[in-house]
Image (cartoon, rainbow, N blue to C red; front, side, top):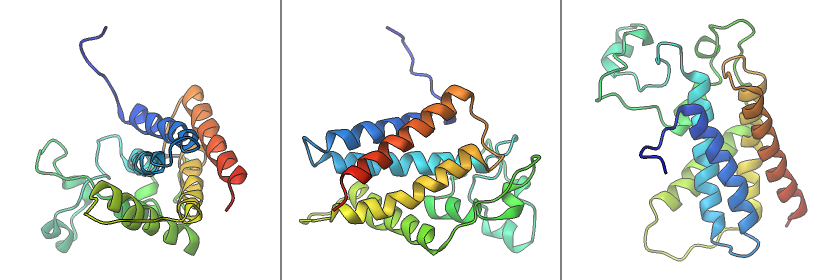
Length: 195
């Protein structure tokens, strides 16, 4: 047995996607696995966005202090070693992957072109689903499975784009194949369980 857990950003994102696919299968026998699916798929999507936004100097993924933004200073002035820095949130990461200036920097790199469906899905997944599970308040809550499917399906396109077409996320062949397989499993499950 190892004495340490070692994980990096790529393993973090790919493992969360894999766990989301596993949790989804478990919903057949235990509907509470929908909660874990939502948490895991949100986590995976968020971390794939961060991987795509991260520059080689680790910039591009941090909240920018207002005083620097107000003065028009470049995002590179952020001290990435400062423990006071905070990662951008899910919604801001989603907005940033749509910006040409943030998604350039490599040959053939390009931003994600989101439509209204992607934007609505990002809000549903983050604000309504994930946040309510992560910060669950005393209540009874019923969620239509179709609502979950509608929130997640467009966001799978985001992950596919980031991994396969953005030119900003560099996974090895095994990791790319794993991502594609996990997404295919999730889509197959969704197709077999239309409500």
